[in-house]
Length: 98
Image (cartoon, rainbow, N blue to C red; front, side):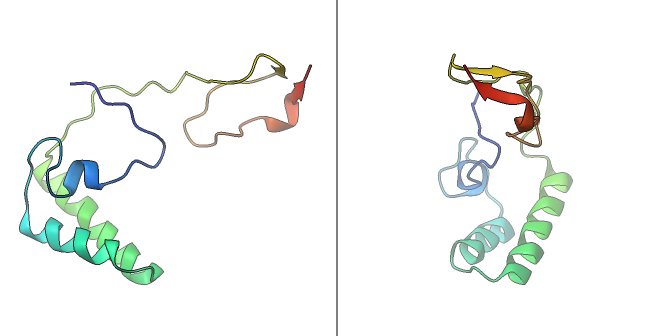
């Protein structure tokens, strides 16, 4: 199956109720409930860390491919515009409008 994701996908798609694989883990369900109801960074850090550990243990999804060479921009924008997985503004100092 193919799915298009942004750089920060919504985790409900993969771990929330009715996720795309019908994957269920009670601890993950509790974590998703906690993170949806808090903004405290230390709690989010702890819970997302545990979510990642569970993901590595159970491997409910296996990513096979991610297109990292695609850039969408207006034709009037020129310069050294190359894709970068980590920074959408990579080489912005070399971009300019024509």
